[in-house]
Length: 339
Ligand SMILES: [Zn+2]
Image 1 (cartoon, helix red, strand yellow):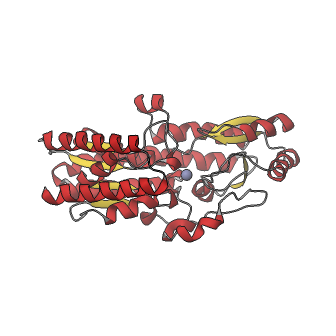
Image 2: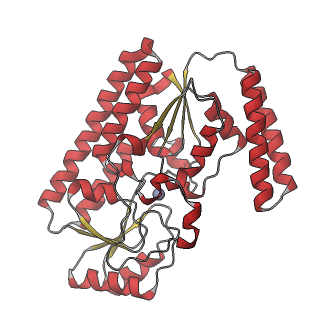
Image 3: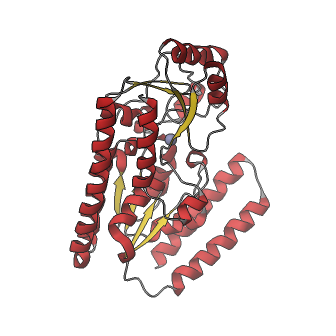
């Protein structure tokens, strides 16, 4: 316990120093101190530590862990529903939750570079750590014709993390999702052998659902009239298109910070839609849809939304929406896009 409190103190000091380094805000410091105090009370007051404690950073692995662990696990997603996953920063409570968990599941890409420093500052000897990017084959982020590369290369020397060149959106391929579900279920079975059969059955059932989706995507691609998708938006679907042999044009790569496309990019996409008579122009969830509106108006193409499952809205989260639900909706969208 003393070790834990010590490391929490160290983490707090590190966090405060980093806050001071950016811009000093006394109110935030006070709030953080209060929230640490209340989290410590929660931890000390919790005597029922029977369930496997699982913490995930973003939605996909939260959904997989929920499907496998059900009521047998104590599950927490650090990202709040309805918020943009790329601007997430861990709160002191989040750091304590990681410290206290048995299994921590993160993606491991550039957006989660913060994880490395936090894990380094902790005693992780009793914790199983799963990085999605470590268990599937990773692909480089790609700049394709017409795309606007808004990545600020002047900051490159500050991004020393080895995964920074890789596209982090591995879960957008249902084939990868199956590999990830298998790995998560293995870790649950090892950490809580008593409930191994429960986890195994749940994982098998969920894999069956994801595999059905995989089959449906394959069928749609096979019977589609085209292979090219137009994303008037960011493009976190590199793994998805790779899995199904699709081609794409997009305004921005990966989850680039860009939301304002330049005239050349918009003109390129408009021209592509017109010359190839593409029926729909695609946006992603939580988008301002501005680029898609311009292209739809100019070309008459229909605007549709493809969901990347980084996160879900608060309403959807409370209603218990799943990765499978999201992908089922994407099946409809893909069907329309390949007509
Ligand atoms: Zn992303």
